[in-house]
Each structure stands twice: as structure tokens, then as C-alpha cells.
Length: 403
Image (tube, rainbow, N blue to C red):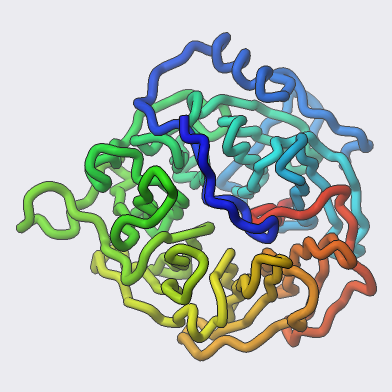
């Protein structure tokens, strides 16, 4: 097992470390035992607050629902003990703490009326919660040492899981975790795990970003984006005239954080080695199978991009400008690629910004003096008089919006 992780400041969620090993099938009992060993109850998630009013009976959800979001789902963790999940009413901004216990390294994805908690390094499992009351539907393993980093729902019966420590993208039933197959991506990194960071659906094709790092987590060549035909679960060759299967080559190294999508395009940020201005933001056309090249560079951002969020005609990025002490702030940019401008001030340590359905911008702040969630109008004016405490420091990738 890898024992060395990149020593980043607490302002950034680690790129992730895990076993670089072949995936091996495990039975349900073994999976439950591994989940329990990681500190989770395989039968239930702790919910210390009265649930929201919701359906009665065995919990279920619909990942394809278009129900309107009514609350924010926010994760908190200190990376040394189990994390927590809080919900925040989008209208009143009332906070309900301790809705569920999650891992020490979690991220959240919301699809329809389903909330997916991706428990990453050291936990290797997915929790599926019903959005209405955050009751547990299922908790399933993604394989020992797999270090899942992202999940994309393709249909009500199929989801892709990007596993940082595995050679193959996993195909599962999103609610049960039943494995439906895998797609081997090791050919993109000389037979090794290519460090899958994110997976996003754009039309009928899925895009998987790959970091391609060495044993010391240093980038080895520019990042790649694998293209997948979701109707056949097969890789698409960008250049049939060249031997093997070719992925889309990014302009710079180390695609980091969640890939996003607008109509017809995927959006990817790269960070290089985190400590220089060698990253940028670019778009991927999955039909033309091309990358745009850098739309906005790290030089223009003034630091490394931790996370991206897109809403309407604007995008938001959390940009790290220092590590000791950790310093990050949010910048706003137009989707046409105009130079970014500071958003919501450059104080504190804002590690994440996500756009809510009403276009307000929800920001995760980990600074000791202002720890919690801050809400801003699109103009940049803060709407919260004080940060909303969620019980633990918020994490990058830890804000979602659900019914």
C-alpha cells in the first residue's frame, strides 16, 4: 500500500492515496466486514435529529427525479475521525446537525432524490441516502483499497464510480451497489492505476479525468480524459489511426477536483504540482473529442484551483494562494473565459463554492475564526451574518443540494 501522501494543507482535500492493486471480487459478508472495520455500521447511519417529513416504509429514492431542491447537504470532517453530515434549509438557512455519520474523507453527490456519500481513502464505500429524510438506503463497498473519488449516475439502473486506487472504472446499480461490470483504464498509464479523479456525464458520453502520477504523487505527463459510450460501456478511441485506444490529452498536468458539465461540454481544472502556476481550466468536447486548451490559466487565477462550480453564465472557483497558513478564496469568471475577479472577499480560507438552484453561492470556509458555510448573493454580497456551523470543518466536495 502506498504510505506517502502529498503533504497539502488542510485547505485542500488530498488527491487521495490507496492501494494500486488489481480489483478482486469480494462477497457481501467480506464487504460488510471491511466497512465495519473502517468504522461504519453496515445496517444504519446515525441520525441524531428528527427526520424531515417523508415517505413511510423501506427507504428508496429516484436518481432520475427532477424534484426541486429544498436544502443543502453539507459534509464536515477533520480527516482524523468520522465526519458528519448537516442539512441546511435553502430558504430559512436553518441548520440541522448530525443527520448522518460519514467517513473522515467524504464527498457528496446528489442525483434526483438520492444523496450519495463517497467515502474515500481508508473507507472504500458508498452510502446512499433518501433525500427527503436522509435515511440510509444502502451502504456498499467499492473494493478494498479502491479509494472511490467520484460517482456519476447514468440511468436509474446504472452508475459509474471513478476509483483512484484501481485500474478499472466500476459499473454498479446506483442504489444496491450490485456490480454490473468494469472498464479497464490501465492502458492509459502503462498498466497502472491512472488515478481516476472524476467522472461526469455529458450527453450520452461519460468523461473520466485521470491524473497519471508516480509513486510519489508527481505528475507524469499531461492529464488525460477517457471517453466512454454509456450505451455500450466501452471506451471511445479519439484517434483510430493510432495503435491502441487514445484519450483526450489535456494542456497541462494533474486534473484535480470534480469535473463539471454544461450543455455539450465538460469542464476540467488542472493543478500541476500544486506549488507552481502550471494548471488551468479547459473544456472537453466529447463529440469532437477535443480539448479547448487553457481558457483561464493559474497565472490569471493567481493560484491553484481546488474546485469548480458552474451556474447560468458564470463559474466560480476556489483558488489556493498559500499553504502556511492555508489561504484560499473564491473567484468568479464568465463561461466565455473572461479573466476571473475576486468574489466575496479574499479573507478567511474559502475552499469550496457551489451555486444553489436560486443562484446564491454557498461557500465552505475552514478558517478558525469563520469556520462554516457562508452564503452570498450573485453580486458577492454576503447574506449570512455569521458562518453557519455544521459541527466540523467543511470539506472540498462537501456541498450538494437536494429535495
